[in-house]
Amino acid sequence: MNTSSLKCALPLLAAMTMESASAAQFKALLFTKTAGWQHESIPAAISATRRLSELHDFAVVHSDSADVFTPENLKQFDVVVFLLTTGDVLNERQQDAFQAFIRSGKGYVGIHSAADTEYDWSWYRGLVGRNFLIHPAVQSAKLNVLEAGFPGLEFMPARFTWTEEYYTYGAEHSESLNYLLSVDESTYQPQAMWGEIKSNGMGEFHPIAWYQQYDGGRAFYTGLGHLPASYDSAMFLSHLYGGIYWAATGKGIE
Image (tube, rainbow, N blue to C red; front, side, top):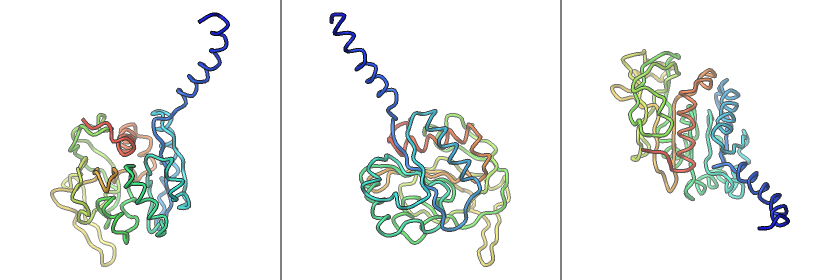
């Protein structure tokens, strides 16, 4: 290439380099609509996810409106994160769009009260895996890592202390759940009673995070993330990003 041709090519090469550098590895929709309890940790969770997107080079769009759940709009995303959602957040048309999104091979991430969402939609119950029933007061307890090869669990010891609003969950709504974390009920007080709803916990096995292949797509859920300060924890954020990364790409499991 002569000097003149090289000078002409430099702007194009520079533009291509800039475009490559700005290309995100995937795109996530961060959905925070609530139709029930609204967690005070939502702003911290949004900010933390945006920091993760900068650290790990993925694009993120936040919305607390279900109007974003249209087939045309969802096409641009690789994963939808139900971040601290509660209650009935999607109408039937929006449910259809989200179901088609997952069936096209895309991903879902549920954080904490995503299990307290869409109880009357059987497909979503299968997607999230288990529903929230009740919880005791926030306490510290011992957690166990059950599958260390899942992305994001590299920074978690095999057994560690964590402070959380530990949900008690109902029965499995899917037979495909792979469990990542469990909480040792002997290390805290799992008993809770809300009027006629009473629980002594889940017993010997109390899962708190899991993942699965579901209806053509991928689903990850973690029950952690109640406290705003959780989103300042590098260990928790690694766990959160690992779930987003796997749900968006299907990569990372060893």
